[in-house]
Length: 202
Image 1 (cartoon, rainbow, N blue to C red):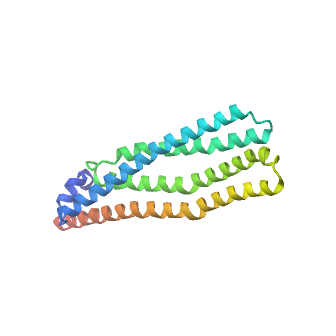
Image 2: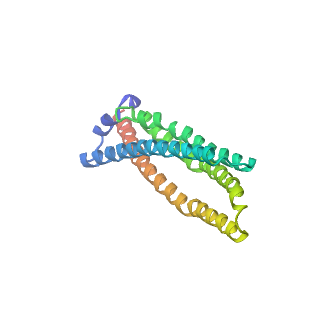
Image 3: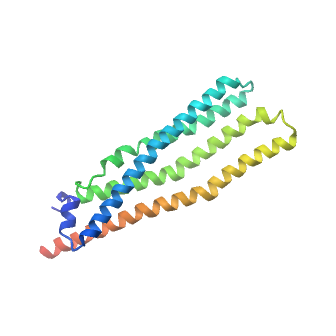
């Protein structure tokens, strides 16, 4: 019986103030909308970057094989990121307040797990491939510079990747995990409360 109740019906059986119910619904919808918006923006940004990198290849016509390999390695992680990010779209769209409470919670947990995979495994692969790609791409051009400027150029790139990896990335991951963990926790409390009510009625 419990799994046939949708989220609104579940909440209507709970002694939870309407303001709290409405606030939680808004938070879930906001999280879903923000997730979809981020995916669409990322799609546009990555696609534009891929086109830009290809145009650079065509315009500058690199001579060394290392440069060409670097370009391919720079594009590959972007394609991987696009594939895995777009797999999130059905999950976000599937999240509906009229789902059964079990399905609703299960879908949020799936979103959390997918996001975790993207933030860890996929982003690790992304940064490794992109770093290697840019490093190989730069070689042909930094080789023509004085040694000091070549070292300076590579140092700037390493510092930028280091800042993204060790400072920005952990903050973004922590913020996103906190948001979805909070939503799941609140929904689980409501589900647990319903189970208690059903048990008492029996």
